[in-house]
Image (cartoon, rainbow, N blue to C red; front, top):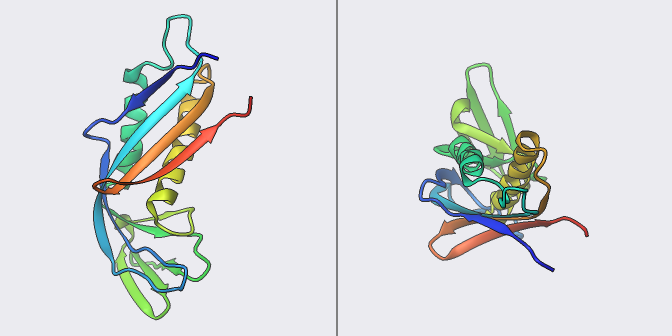
Length: 165
């Protein structure tokens, strides 16, 4: 079986964001930030022009996603204990086991994940990337998508989607 893919790991596929990880025992990290980097591999059938997807078409979609996350505080909106609320003064308040944080709502992104691990960030990015690519390029049928998010040098959380044969 033959397969084709494109890989994207541009210097500008990065975002800086604040978060805190919540551990299985309920403890949590201190609020801190990372300079995340993103790498994407996309596998699909070759078009009649010999392309999986033109790099010039794929790169802006990845860039759009990382730019949306850049310079924000990332909150896990599906964590079973963490609670957040937005008030009428443009503030988001986060409560987790006696810890209370407040930040301007424009600085906060609540993601549909249960923890802000690099694995979950790669999952959200991968699913959102697949959705946006399908909407913009309906003729491209993704066979496999791999998205990796580097939290610190040499440490990647990886999401992979593979279409059933």
